[in-house]
Image (cartoon, rainbow, N blue to C red; front, side):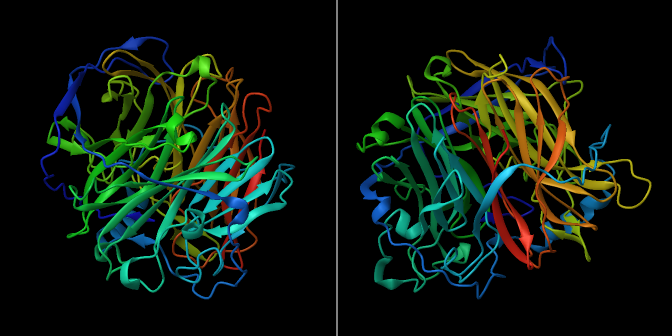
Length: 581
């Protein structure tokens, strides 16, 4: 689910615990540079600490969960997309944005066949999306071990072996987490859960999932129910089937009058982290970004936990405070010896613009924020990563074309969509991520402004009070003509090879899945070797296409990267899971 108002209102918060600020003098690397450049001015990055309530806990066995009975979709047009006319107008105007970043070299438009191994995942149906009897978009979660593939799509989970044989499921989210019934049957459809995320922890062999629950009139679900915002987080031992399930209250015991949207989920050696974009229960407008961090070892053993919570994340800029959204927790894909000892987060600038006065819609934004939570003192610090020369810019992209329809496949805004990953595989401690952006591809024919991907790696270290981030490298992946690239998700292996799965379509290409990669020895700023993972045999009739795709790592022994995304079949969405290394 994605909730977006073009003009984001920043509402005053209730009195929470102590405000702390970190003053960062953004020492950064310019794009493709090997030397440090000092920022011209200091900025103030801040958050507020909230008082989280203890999570509730229970245990289930996934092998005993009832499986959804297969039913064809009866209402696949039901969309989990909340937007207003201003957002639609901005997306249309993005196709002629003269301030869109200018690309230097379009990616080769390869239409060759691929030999990538993969298998069909879940597809839209009334069993996969029982709340609506079918839905759009899928929203992708993937966690892969050397033996199993755990996939989440929208409101269900399923587990396959690595040959594609179904082992568990599909299981509806409500059943997966054993969510209790709503009071007084206030919503006959039952609890509303969506937006799955998942990861596999190669150091412990456990699978983890996270899904949001919301009941609120302002969100259009559970309209007769008490306002509710819960993150359901679970860890699963596939050997035993035992799953410890936790429920975290995103309203912080009712001290916050807002509910979470857009599940974000990551981990470090000692922590589990999740975050959400908080929308006001009364007005429906965006209020702030909230992050929570919990003790991973306690959750692995099914012990009680109380998370640390932070709200109102942002930065002071030329026009005052800029509240940020989609502050993504990072997946730490290292062995225990290389664990950074902190939980990293990263965000781009988006609906409220950047601290330099750009709006990210009609004027391109630049810079990123990197945050680090230190479990030793339970503090969250942040820093601006931005080079005064050569910093990549980004702006909301137009929607993508498909056969028979211009600008009708959704591409989202300027947030980071796929879960970022921290790895030292290439010899550097790097956070890798991508985001959708408009790109001027220099085409002679309209449109020359196309949806593309800005990908980047930030080199990070952590000191006693704040993280230090340098822009190690970045680049754009985009095509010529009207061909679009959107919804990227990245993963790096132990040799530093970087992979990015993404969606693509054009007036001559149905919505399809591709993969790009680069070796650690390749020139900085370049990614290529583009291959099709799955071509869509038909155009889509869906008004939504996705919020995010997924990539996963099987661990340092097997060293395989798997990806999951969607493609169009008979006008609706289907998913595909593939091993790309």
